[in-house]
Length: 159
Image 1 (cartoon, rainbow, N blue to C red):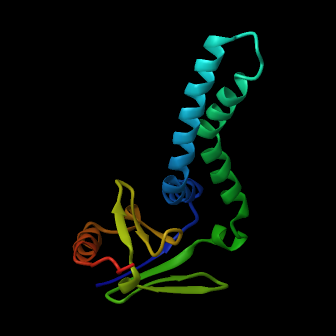
Image 2 (image 1 turned 60 degrees about the vertical axis):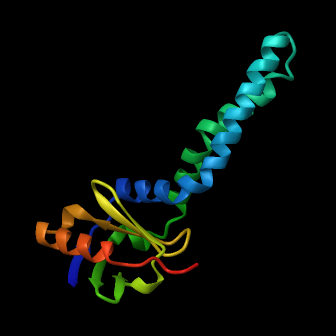
């Protein structure tokens, strides 16, 4: 396999990638938020005149609905300006190579933890926080088929 493409900066795709990466870490907070909200509602039902029962209710709603968007927005702001210039992506049988004017990253397929396919991209994960987004719209049908077959034959790294 040898696939090479220029990947322009796409803010929406970066946001989706960050959400994809953060989702497993945010799930416990959303569950905690739901539990706090239910406890808060029960306490408010018992004594709506007291201010104290509203604390877990408000905290629960914050945890359930606002922590993830705030974290994604903060992560977007923390990204280096160099990523806004796009990068060159090369996929071959041994490596994923990302090159921009200031740096080059090479990741061996043998270190792959998992690959997740979505309608618009593949997310290939090397560890829990290192994701490479491989956009489908920049590939030909033949390249998509070749890459899909290649990824389906990979074995996740033992971890």
